Image (cartoon, rainbow, N blue to C red; front, side, top):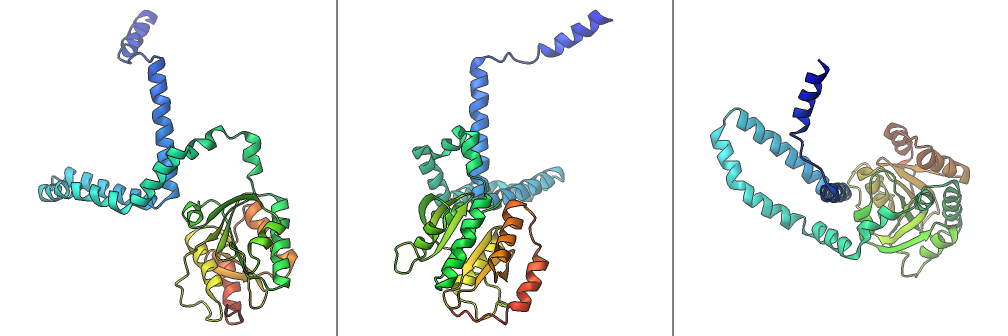
Length: 293
């Protein structure tokens, strides 16, 4: 019984090709490339494209199962045109991917130590620096717009600005948004404990329910919060009011303690305030705004 079992097992194993050192190297290279492609898709608009391709593939399988010959013929004829169209639409993303490959930025995160990775995490000290910066600028009515990255990557937004890669500090943020300085216009993107980029452009919200009293800075804050899970801090240049945009809604933070509590809840404890909570606060305040930046 035992001999027949091992004979059958050996017959099955004999079908498996031998894996040598070269095969292991090839597997590692292919795995790494697939991983980088997935990261690239996640960080760009290609994720939307991937969903569309998945839907088309599912429809193709459906047509093949039902033997819908006319539809299969049409899809075959349009496939070449579709590939060309994809290359044209995503030429900028493909160019950036090749630039990253040439500059070897794609490989930097691979060799990042655990200690370096921990330094990038959002910390209590960063919360304190942001609160201090917001209310220092509020006191002198310096307009500011700061986007805090969470799960949704802000790579596209960061590319519209100038790389900073400096540790978050109230002095740095105040200097960036100082009037008549080269970096004061636009938004700052903060990733972990670092100011990733400045002078970044944000999409404006097209929500018609937003109070007309809110200016471009507040519309931009609401706009980026509608498209991502980011937390955006706004300091009004007109009134000095500090506000927070999350999930397409705006909440005023009248005191340092209130702002600190919001940041700790959203960025440290990972307990997002629901859109309904923020939305109700925003609706109560949307007619009270008097910032006409």
